[in-house]
Structure formats: C-alpha cells, structure tokens
Length: 513
Image: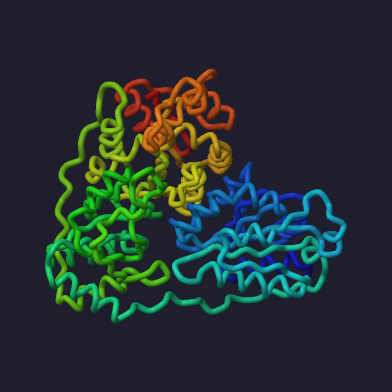
C-alpha cells in the first residue's frame, strides 16, 4: 500500500468522508487512491478559495470535518482568505496540501514555496509527512487536531514521494481532544454580576447562539433582568420561529457604542470583547464603555452550553418560555429595499432552511424583520474576508445531503471573488437559491470612505464602481450551469424565490437594487 492509499483509508477510518478538492500534479496519487477506495465523496472546486470556503460551510452544518486537497504553496495561498474566515468561525478542517517530493525541493522548482509558513498563518496544527510510513499516523493526528476544542484548522503537508512510495499504514481513530472544562470561578463571577442587578449584557457567540444555548440565556435574562445580544461575527445562529429574537452587535462603530453605552457589566459567552472592525479617526477601538466590567463566562475553546447551564443552576433559574415572534409576514411589494427583501425572506423561507448571509451593507438590518421566518440556521462570514458567502452555502448544502434549502443573500462585489461556487452547485445538483444583490458598486466602501473622513470624488468613485461594463449575473450564472433570472421589483423577486424553492437544483435571482 502506498502513502496516498493509507491517507484515504485513514481519513475514512477517522470519520472524514468528504473531500473538497482542486488537485494538481503533486496530488495525483491521492486522486488515484480515491479510485481504489470507495466511501469518499469528492467535490471539485474550480478555485482554491471555493474549496476552503466549502469546507468551512460543511463543518458549520455537519459538525464534523471535511478534508480539503490543495496544490502546493500557491494553491494554499489561493485558499487562505476563506481559511482565515474558517479560523474565525472555529471550523474544523483537515487541510491537506500536496507538495514537491522531498528530494526535489532543493532544486528550487518554480512552485516551491514556504508551504508550512503559509499554513501557520491560519492553522492551529501543521505537520509535513517525511515518509510514506508516516502518512497514516500524521493523517489521524491531523483529524484529531482539527476536532480539538471548538474546531480548528489542521494542515498536513504531503510531499509527493510520500504519496507514491510503498509502506503506507492505515491508522484508526485517535481519542478526541475534549473541550476545556467550564471554570467554576468564572461562573461565580458572572452570577455575582447578574445578582447585583444593574445593566448587564449577555453577549452570545459559538454554541451559545444555538437552540439550547439561546434557551438557557433567555431563561437567565428573564430571571435577572439582563439583556441578550449576539456577537456580530457569529458563524452560525439558530433563528426564526421558536428561537430567541436575538439582535446582532451593530457593525457601525457609532451604533455599536450607542448600543453598549448603558451596560455596566458584559458577560462574554464564547464571545470576545466588542471591538471595531477598523480604526477610524477620533473614534475608540473598543466599543464598550471604559467603565464597563467584562466577565468571561466561557472562552471559544470551552462549551458555552455547559457554562450557561452551570450559570443557570448557580442562579436557581427555571426555564422560561420564549415568546412568539408573531405571524409570518406576506411578501413585500414595490421597489427593492433591505426591509422589503427581509420581509420577503421571512414570508417565504422554507422550514429548516440554511441562510448564508454575505449581503454586506444591504443586509445589516435583516435580523429585526426575519424573526418570524421558519426555523433556520443563519450563517455569517466571520473573518471579514469577502468571497465567503457562496462557498459556505455550497458546503452547507453538501453537509445537509441536499435535504435542506440553502438561501444565499449575496452582494455582487464579493460574489465575483468566488462565483465558481455556482458551477459546483450545478454539478452537485444542490438546492441552492442565490439572491444576488446587484447594486453594481462596492457600496460598503463608499460608506467606509466617508467614515474615515473623506469625500469620494470622481476618481475614487471609479474605484468603487462595478459598472462600465455592468456585470450580467444572469449570463454569468448560466455560464456556470445555473438557471437564473433578473428581478426589478419585490413582486418579481418573491415569485422567483418561491419557484426556486420548489426546484431540486440551484437557481440565481439577480435583484437589481
């Protein structure tokens, strides 16, 4: 058995049965091993940033890692932006990067790069296999490392000779690395702050934003008078009817400072202290008041649900009923607006759908108008690297086995970074609906230009404009094998959205805004 065969069989033995790939010459023996070993679902991405983004979305729904297969240092570099997002999302990814044969590297061939150095920028664990005999052991350790804590990126660099050499050994599943235990002292500190009354905020992230975590946090808030809010960059939030009507931290620094101004205590549940995305002249980096006390109930590598349960027990809290979000609205009419699109999504979203939200500035107010939607999982781009929305949607659809409708709320500028995702959706026949928000400009950057104290002139606006020529998303989608249509009104959008939800495959709606 060669090293590549031992790699595939070890991955399967360790529960990794999906591989998102964009292979090259160095990975051909891995590709050949897939022919010899049934059980691995291989999904081709036409660009590495699509591959890594799909692995991120897969983890968020499946809650088990997929493998990636990338080609040498430059291929890894192409996928780094969405690995950055995945790291911020605490997504478990078994990131496999083929590389030059160990004896070939000293000749400095054109693709030679500091592959390990690139990997370390996003990975919690990095290893390069030295021999075919080591590949199975290293692969099992890679899976174990990816699953550690709340989930992380583990990168295995695989020189090509370790794949084709004989001597591979299959290694079974290694014991999991458990989440760090809840800190009893942290629970006591948070309980004291809540008992004291005053203005207390529970800021939720990670599993605290799931169904069980929300229910516990809501019960604590009802018993103590505390307020709840979700971190702005949460990877996955359980939303819709039957869930808490959580609002996100605002993106805008002024609005965030205003939202937090009254709180004397902020209890962080798997969340970080709120800070601005960027620095702005004459504005603070921290968005919370300087006199507010921060209490870390749980860190990302700890179980937020267990921490909330321990806090509820310490406070003697009983379960409180989550209030109804009211009747579902009817679809909106008239010209497209953020409020109209949110209302239409709430009206039409199927049960147990998945929403991948990269709507950028257009969608910052979607939450307050979509609480009445059918129960859903809402996914965000967590690291600020644009181009995550479409790949995350694609990976999520694959994780759900095609059984859940996925809705992408997607800005046009960021969609251009990873539009190849549409091709994978077509090839895999995935139930993905994309509402492409076509304003033909980097609208967020127009706002940021003003936020730093500048007024955009003709030259600046040209750099922020996506027209001349306009992007034709219907033709772009068709070219990727995806059926598409254009909508200029909310009535047209609603009709197309409802029709797409009845289809088995992907559909794109270019909503001209």
